[in-house]
Length: 581
Image (cartoon, rainbow, N blue to C red; front, side, top):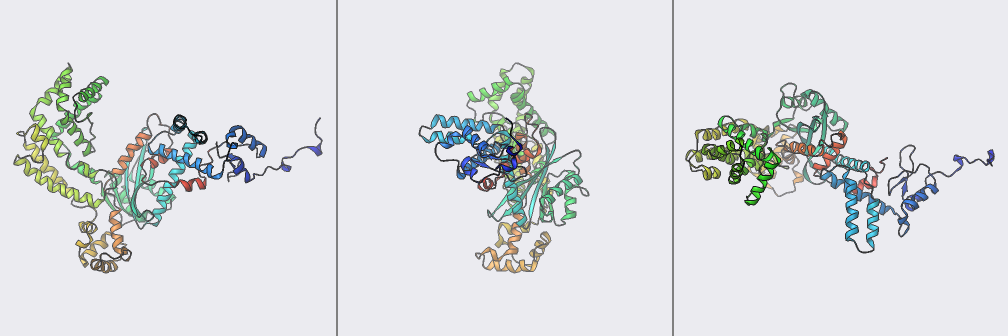
């Protein structure tokens, strides 16, 4: 029998308003956006009809174990959410795909089932199973974590007096151009200097200086960051970066005239030691030998590894070098010399013309003398220039020290003592050639020429290294004022004089002195952080993950390289990541 009009049920007359007690009783919330529907905090499923019957049925059917003991209290829900966030954080720190989140959950459940024997095991396993870690949810959590870190960076930059940038560009797995922008600043919150990835900017088409500037300016404007606060910028020295008229640095100086620019110290070091002639030919031949052993075939690589393993060699495998890095050159050559006996034996076992040719080269004393020389010369500076957290004052000191060492090396070679060339002394002590001596002399001259100017006076570097070593006088304050126009010259002179007489007083009284120190210590000395980040980018966006969106790539990359840690508690309380559907 059909209902009469007077008996017909009406939606308006039903109680379909969300009740706050459903949060504690059933673990549901009502999101704050328009036309929101009840959302289960346990499994993130949405209920289409806002009725207690539907919500209760969902809870009893899918989460019945929650009724066997304490209910899903807000504290428990927050713990599950926090655990999910931290799981996503760990995945991102290791550069793992979003799909690995579910695998991680399965692993945790299996481990708990195997190792736990007490009565709490079931409750823990249930909590892990309830932890939402689908691909979509993992993406949202990584987005929330990245947003939190990015927000912390921009907040610190708003408070900072100035900061420096390191900028470089490269291509990803799909040949898409990317501009990596790092920022270094003093963080009042942690009372430390931080260097963080602020932007990863996609580039399309041409990458001229004007385009790079427009992209960078857009990002600064969207985040309400003033470009005028940028006091220093380091680049790889390409024309699009340092072009005299339309390069990125030139365009930035139109907005902030006081910006100082530096060509990456590591890149300049590489240019100083660029090989040519006979030495370049030797390096190329060494690389061909290594490639034959490592990449010629799987059998070659396998046999070479077994050979070095059975001979108990000091190194497990050979290294390939990269033309841009001294470090890899030195290591590749060092490994070559360390495995020389094993490599010769390996080549003797191969009955082909290529192996015979390489073996003949390794038996050539003149050839091996050059290899030994290059091994030593590339091994002196490498480890001191690369790495994160390098201070420009330290790197300048190392470079100037190396210039003095080069003079010593030249004398050492001409006298044939070879105290600083142990590999050459071991393999070919009587094979010192004029080409070797000329190369050391050429490198020294190149260093003297390129590192004559560091975009900042050496007197300021000396002051930062040892404030008491610099006297308070008009000449020094004039140098400082020229480098840092925002500094009050008169106040600086007075504070520096007082600082010399009461060096152990509280630094809060020396604001202008501190401003100068912070100005120098926030300078990037190289683009190493950008280059290492590109390596991480290529590990994240592989050919198998080439459909990764730019936003997801930037978020995952920021978490992979960040030195900051997200505020998990704040993210959970704000519930930024809950609404994944």
